[in-house]
Length: 445
Figure: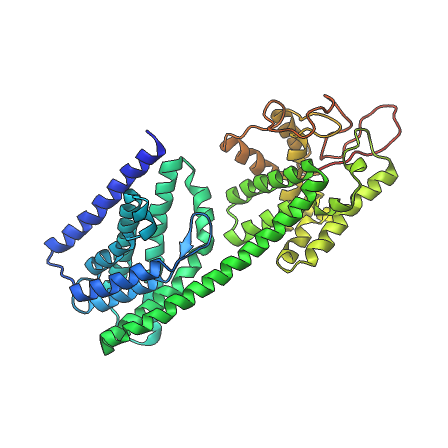
C-alpha cells in the first residue's frame, strides 16, 4: 500500500471518529446554536487563511482563538462538544486545496480540527465560563492544551503512517511550538464571554487579533529564517573552502540530534545542540587548505596552527547574538573527558564523540573511511578516557536503532575517494602510530 493510500485510510478512520462523536452527541439530545456555528465557522475560515508557515510541516493562525470563542458562545445555548465539532469542521475549507482537488486533505484537516475543538469544548463544558478572570484564563489554557494535544497526535500519526517515520522525531519537531497555542485559548475564552454578555456586536473585535497574530508569527518566522540564513552562509563559506568540512558539520549535527533526541533533550536544548554541531568547525576558515588536506602527519608547528581554529570558533560564535549561547559547547578544552566530568554539561562531549565518529567513518585526505564496527570499537575503547562513556553508549545505540550504516562501503559522494587505504593515526582521536617516524600529529575532525 502506498503512502497516499495509507493516508486516505487514516483519514477515513478520523472522519468516522468525528461523525461517530457527532451522532453520539445528537442521540443524547445535544443541540447547537446554528447562528453561532455559522458566524464563528466563517470567521474561522478567514483566520485559517491568514496563517503563517513556521516550518515545512507546521503553520499557525488565530484559528484556535476563534474556535474557542465560538465554543464558549455556543455553550451558553447548546452543547459545547457538538458546537466544537461543527465549528471546527469549517477548517477543512481551504481554497488552495480545493483548487488542487486535494479533497482527502480537506476532509482530514476539517475532521482533525473538529475533534481537537471538541476536546477544547469538553473542557469548557465541564468547567463552565463563569467566574473570575483568572478562572477563565485557566479554563482557556487547559482547553488550548487539550486542543493542541488532540491535533498534534492526529497529525503526527498521519505523517508517521504516510511516511513510516518514527513518532518520537516527529514529536520533537512539533513540540517547540506548543506554547504558542495557550494565549489563543485564553483570549478565545474571554472573547466568547464578551459575546455572551454583549451579543454579536463584539464579533468585530475578532478581526484585530487575527491580523496581530499573523504579524507576530510573520516576524517570528522572519527571525528564524534570518538565523537559518546565517548558518547556511557560514556553512557555505566552509563548503567553498573545503567541501569535506561542510559535509562533516552537517553529519555531526545529524548524529548529535540523534543523541539529543534519545537523551530526551527539550526542544530548545536540542536546537542549541544542533547549532553547536553545525558551527563546531567554523574556525577552520582560518586554517590553510594545505594543512586541512595534508596526507601525512602534521608537524608540531602545523598542528599549533590547526588548533587555533577552536579559539576562533568560540570567538566568532560569541559575536553572533543567537549563536553566543552555544559558544561554550564547542570549546575544545571541554571536550576531553575526565572521571569527575559527569556533572558537567553534556553537550561538549556529544560534539566530541559525534565529531570523532564522523571523522572515522568518512574518507579523509590521508586515509579512506573505516568500517562502522571499527569506529564503534574505537569509541568504546576510549570511553571513560577521551570520551564521555554515557555519550558513547547513547550514540552507538541511537545509530543502531535507526538502522544507519556509515563508513567503508556505505559512503555517499565521498570527497576524498582517492585517499590511501591506511593513514596516520585514528581520525578524530589524535592517536599516534608507533613507528620510527618523528613524533608529530594528524589533522582531525
